[in-house]
Length: 252
Image (cartoon, rainbow, N blue to C red; front, top):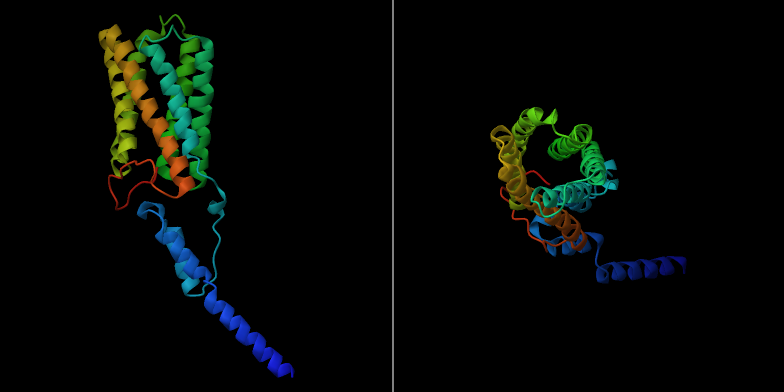
């Protein structure tokens, strides 16, 4: 009697398993519906471990969210805000504007860089911490030398140095995507123009041209932040970034 019940229960379980899709099948279906660039190496490794019935090792980094949008939005707000002032669309910046640059462009981007460092992502770490330091130093120097008498000569070296620091970031961005490449090209152009403007004392370059380049940088960074959030949320490439190099590309 008991043997018959166990056999009947075993037959029912077998039939249920035949009808109900397995976790592996569901995982395969889920991955097949995603865009190619949305399927990560971790997803493939998880599927292989399931197929081979191996234990799944949970990576502690899986518990961290994507910090790139935070850095991109802080970067965008800072450049767009100051770009309006530089291009003479608004009045001369006040101390409140410099405080926004300090907290958004400085503290916000350094925070992003720290999280990227924890996730062992070298390129975003360097990029966001570097630009965060720029905004903090730029804010403090402008608040200290508001008359720009002592600061005028130092600006040549200041912007020239930052142009040199942006050059390797621009070169590295060739392995990312078109949006990030244009963003880094415009910010590199901004520092070069500011350096030339201070050396030649050209108000047009110092103001309007530099301001337009800042606006371009900010808007492209804003778009990059939205692509990170929307594409990751919907698991689809809704807002394209146009990958430039598929092999050994830098995820940004």
